[in-house]
Figure 1 (spheres, helix red, strand yellow):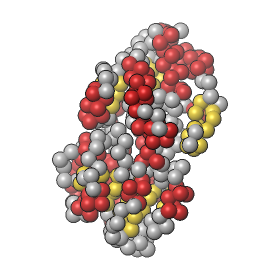
Figure 2 (tube, helix red, strand yellow):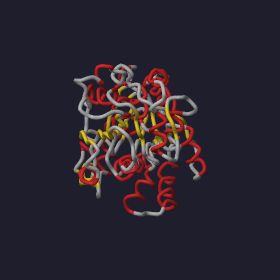
Figure 3 (cartoon, one colour):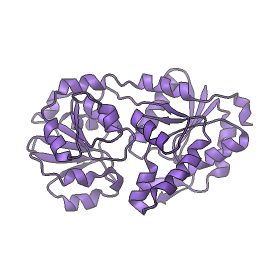
Figure 4 (cartoon, one colour):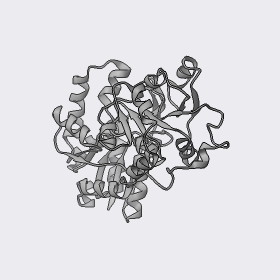
Length: 343
């Protein structure tokens, strides 16, 4: 099939949504599908308020419609609820084309954290957006349950995967040439955006032995550096360098209460790091009852308890998540149509 994917999140952004879609594109192409990406880099953009690193397409409606017609896709998937997502939704409805959507992010909670918009209002907008789709794809049972409770329908599962060849235990990373060789152990590690919705301050404020390390970038990075000078901030890392930083840690601390999955959880587990997190959807679905993480409303208590967990068990658990299986789920969820229908 020729599959058209619309996303307001794309490179050079660094986040779980971008990594998921980038990997999905590669996996779809490996099995013979053609993927057309409709992303902000193909439009005039403006900076997202409070988050200038994110660029939003500026009045993209007419161009998105033209791109859908020109691509002659067999299926349309709308990944995000931003300007491109809404424009693609309107175009598909006008053309009578079925489409699928995905719920990657607890967008209402993010909007509330940044702009204090009431949750019921944001969720009403989200129901309207996703209600027109053939199905809304979610990563976990916990998110499915939450959305169903808020009146969403036609929900289907689309899990995530991890590249276990890149993210793997690396004993040498913990030695004298490793990235944290000069820091006292244990190393409590966070990887992800340094932004208000990620609740990074809940991690940095913990009273823990050893060292706290933050890998990533975001609008709160400089403020966190100034407020928590005892913590160590590496900035963003990529590829083998990122994988080495994971493998050099002792415990992965995931303070977010709003992620729908947390791709970084799988990357940490594949690297042999046990997880400490709050008992919320996302971590609860990835960890479950497996002895690879500690979920507790006392995040400091969870971080200390996670030190006693077995790295081999963490790695074995991550091996159960493959991108190939994730891609098969995605293909099954699509709503194909005849390519000429986009005329």
